[in-house]
Image (tube, rainbow, N blue to C red; front, top):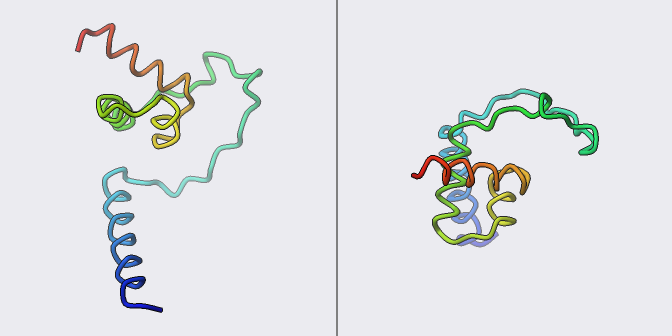
Length: 91
C-alpha cells in the first residue's frame, strides 16, 4: 500500500466517526422494505429534524432532488415534502 492510500483511509475513517457522532447512529436492525403500493399515511414515520435540516441545506446549495434524496436516505417524495413544508412556513 502506498502512504497516500493509507492516509486517505485514515481521513475517511475519521470523517465516518464524526458523522456517526453527529447523527447518533443507532444499532437498530434495518426495517424491512415495504411495497410502495401498500404504504398508507399511517405507516410513514416522521422525518427527524436533523434530516430536514440536511435536506434544506443541500437544497440551498443547489443540488437536485434526486441527489438530495440519495444523500439523505429519503425518498424523492419525502424530500419534496420537507422542502414544501419549509416554503409554507415562509422560512
